[in-house]
Image 1 (tube, helix red, strand yellow):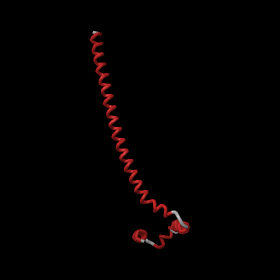
Image 2 (cartoon, one colour):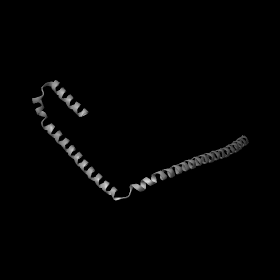
Image 3 (cartoon, one colour):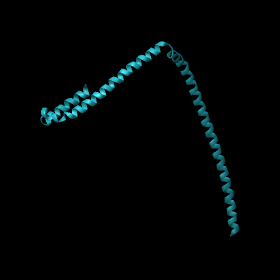
Image 4 (cartoon, one colour):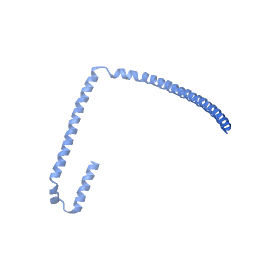
Length: 136
């Protein structure tokens, strides 16, 4: 009984070892083929990017050189800074005015009933406000 067992184990062991070795070789060959394919693709992409970047450098070079010289650029930057400062001040003033109107509106909200009576007039006033806010 043991001799049969040993014979089967030896046969299976040899077969399994051979299959494992063959499978390892196949995996190795597949990995090498995949590596070669990927490296070829990377070289093609690298070459294309290199060509395109050189073409872009040729086109953009003169523009970049002309953009950074002269006192005119300094004057332009000063004008831009001044007008941006004025725009920021105006935007801040408008935001503060909006806050003021909001607080003032909350303060006079109870007086609304003296001017508008009933839900129809309230609806008309809200419709008018929304219309002017959307289309102004």
